[in-house]
Length: 165
Image (cartoon, rainbow, N blue to C red; front, top):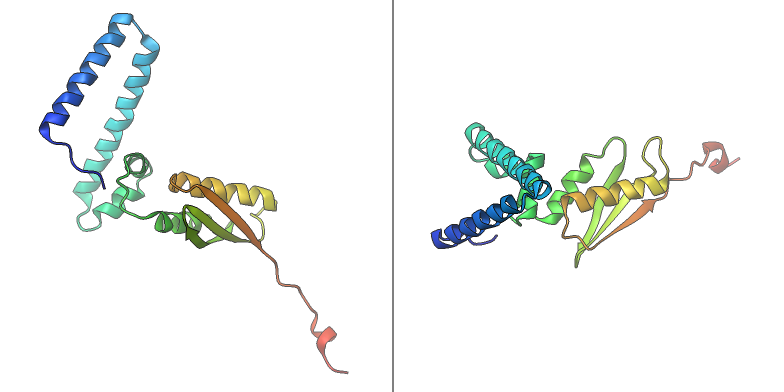
């Protein structure tokens, strides 16, 4: 977790931000200003959700914040997420069920190894692997690589084939 800014750092950052915004306005750079406004809107919504979640929860506040899609994303961006990558990956893979059964089987040195059972309903093995990879990278951007292993389906052997005659 990163250290909290002291008041002087906050003031410097706000002063630099004000100067940068003034420069954009002076250049009449409406495209850049629109991007800044969109960013401010997103952060404002995140803060609004944070306050609402804080009002509704107490001891479960970190989980509630992390569980909100927007706030959780901002926590990731700022390296403030309360859960480690393994926990985030396991929860996200569990959310893929029942369409796809996937399990984190190893997480070492930034590599997540995920085993999947069969393919996603209506999809093929490659699409399933891409779904798993996208899911892992979305919840754990610090992951360097995602290895997807397909578990083989058990072979069906009819009882009559193994029965003694």
